[in-house]
Length: 196
Image (cartoon, rainbow, N blue to C red; front, top):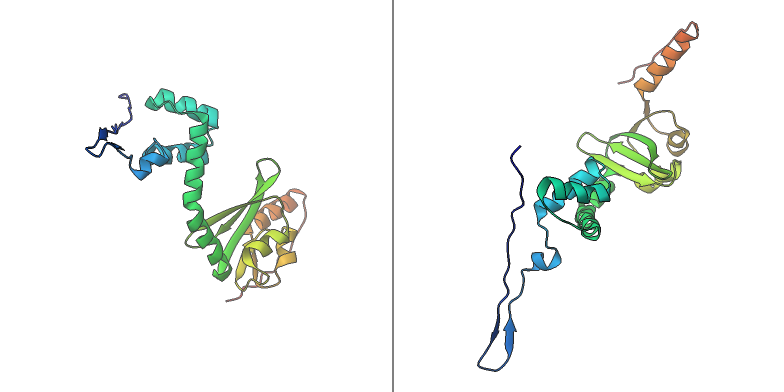
């Protein structure tokens, strides 16, 4: 691969002494005052961290080796917080839309340091939510006291405790259970009701 190198823009601030006797100094553009790193580098940091799960120290080393950019751990964290803050409005907008979605596929899984990662899948977007609990309380916080659509879920008790409406159970879970019963030599007669 050819070597990758950053595009560096230099800003020079000139100070001039006017006829009035006062010294006038140049001002950096607002976006440069906030950070000396551009939007592409910031986006790459977020990508490496959020999607590739590169820890902060390895991120610092990777950017030095791959791109010739020497960035401190503090600057790395500041840029990641900036990205997080910039996504807040869109995140809140999606969260507010969830209760009105007619069909929601929901699941939860263990997450970093005894948290739970909940995923709400719609036909147009996927919403992730990290919670300390794996209970119906999380569903109530996200969907409100009463959800009027169809939930597509596994048989985890939090769903049936929260919701008494139309529910589609995960077929993958049912298929796995049926395969397990067959492995035990259990004979089964299954009856399915299909509603339209």
